[in-house]
Length: 58
Image (cartoon, rainbow, N blue to C red):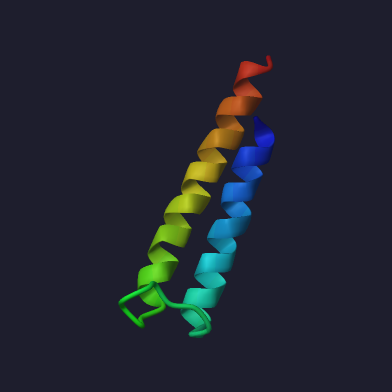
Protein backbone atom coordinates (compact mmCIF):
# COMPACT_ATOMS: atom_id res chain seq x y z
CA UNK A 1 0.00 0.00 0.00
CA UNK A 2 1.80 3.07 -1.26
CA UNK A 3 -0.50 5.61 0.39
CA UNK A 4 0.62 4.56 3.88
CA UNK A 5 4.28 5.11 3.02
CA UNK A 6 3.57 8.51 1.49
CA UNK A 7 1.51 9.49 4.53
CA UNK A 8 4.37 8.51 6.87
CA UNK A 9 6.79 10.67 4.87
CA UNK A 10 4.45 13.68 4.91
CA UNK A 11 3.82 13.43 8.66
CA UNK A 12 7.55 12.94 9.26
CA UNK A 13 8.34 16.09 7.28
CA UNK A 14 5.78 18.08 9.28
CA UNK A 15 7.31 16.82 12.53
CA UNK A 16 10.84 17.73 11.42
CA UNK A 17 10.00 21.16 10.06
CA UNK A 18 7.75 22.01 13.00
CA UNK A 19 10.19 20.68 15.57
CA UNK A 20 13.30 22.36 14.19
CA UNK A 21 11.53 25.67 13.57
CA UNK A 22 10.28 25.74 17.16
CA UNK A 23 6.61 25.87 16.18
CA UNK A 24 5.87 22.36 17.49
CA UNK A 25 7.22 20.39 20.43
CA UNK A 26 6.74 16.93 21.84
CA UNK A 27 4.19 16.96 24.63
CA UNK A 28 5.84 17.26 28.02
CA UNK A 29 9.26 18.29 26.72
CA UNK A 30 8.84 21.77 25.19
CA UNK A 31 11.80 20.85 22.97
CA UNK A 32 11.34 20.64 19.20
CA UNK A 33 14.34 18.37 18.69
CA UNK A 34 12.49 15.57 20.47
CA UNK A 35 9.75 15.89 17.85
CA UNK A 36 12.16 15.99 14.92
CA UNK A 37 13.71 12.63 15.87
CA UNK A 38 10.43 10.66 15.54
CA UNK A 39 9.83 12.61 12.32
CA UNK A 40 13.05 11.22 10.88
CA UNK A 41 12.06 7.73 11.96
CA UNK A 42 8.68 8.15 10.25
CA UNK A 43 10.38 9.22 7.02
CA UNK A 44 12.69 6.19 7.10
CA UNK A 45 9.70 3.91 7.78
CA UNK A 46 7.73 5.52 4.94
CA UNK A 47 10.57 5.02 2.45
CA UNK A 48 10.87 1.40 3.58
CA UNK A 49 7.15 0.86 3.06
CA UNK A 50 7.29 2.42 -0.41
CA UNK A 51 10.22 0.24 -1.43
CA UNK A 52 8.52 -2.87 -0.04
CA UNK A 53 5.27 -2.06 -1.87
CA UNK A 54 7.16 -1.41 -5.11
CA UNK A 55 9.07 -4.67 -4.97
CA UNK A 56 5.97 -6.78 -4.27
CA UNK A 57 4.23 -5.61 -7.45
CA UNK A 58 6.96 -7.02 -9.73
